[in-house]
Length: 241
Image 1 (cartoon, rainbow, N blue to C red):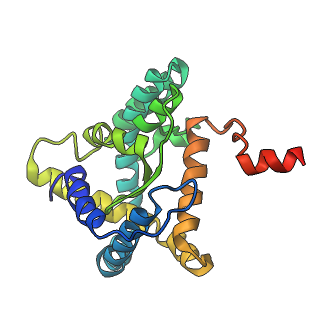
Image 2 (image 1 turned 90 degrees about the vertical axis):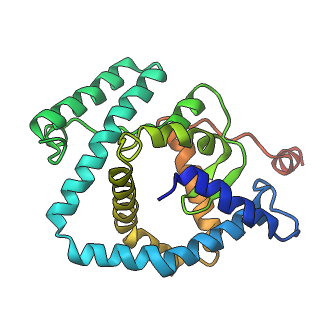
């Protein structure tokens, strides 16, 4: 398996070459490109990822899937602690670091979420959130090939996030590729019920996914208390009238 960032760049270049020239929606200046990449991702999901994830759920016992989820989450907890520290939140960083130590030591490498059972909540953070914490705006909405919804800021942070992921921390190429494949399939399996609900509800799936992602990322960057959105020109004009 190639580095997913390089794969995104390669496929993205191909998609850009074939994008339509219709005007984009205000607030989503890359909509034409995004919709093309979104359609590409949907086809890959339909043909490969969803069937594999469905089979994974049927074959792998729930107890084992929970253990895999805990191990992946435990590695993420350490990176979350680093990002909390970078965001000048030392108490939360210490808590997340403690959570990692407890689960690694007493949870057999994170297979069991001992810290969670003790009431130590997981507070996941990534480098995109850290950049947002220090005032870097999200930039335009961006759909990445294979990786899905993002924005320019978060896409810029992805290489560093990937290096701190379970796959990125492994030196052996075979182990790294196997872990990457397992992470992708496991993550897709967790989202089966969510995507099923979206398929049933959405008149325009692209818009539903985009708006949901943007709202969630804004909420995460501001720790659940985002400031009010600035008024648009049309809203200001309406108020004056």
